[in-house]
Image 1: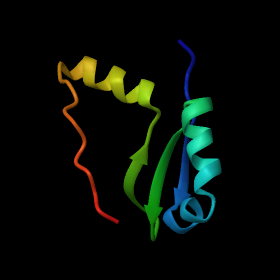
Image 2: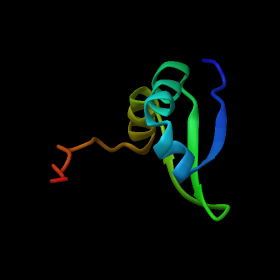
Image 3: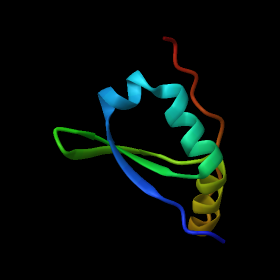
Image 4: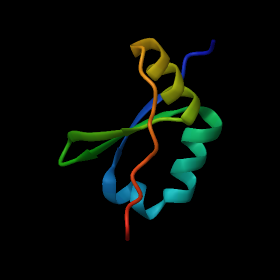
Length: 69
């Protein structure tokens, strides 16, 4: 298994380039740490990474809540 890259990115930068950010996470399996004022807020990970993390924790994902935008 290859080492994936972790990148810090401001939330506003991620928002402005969301299509590219999603591609980086999905295709390159980069972990994108979203920051605001240099404080970590959230991390975007690929579905494969997420599934591996759930397995390592012995958990399963339930159905996602649907958010009305």
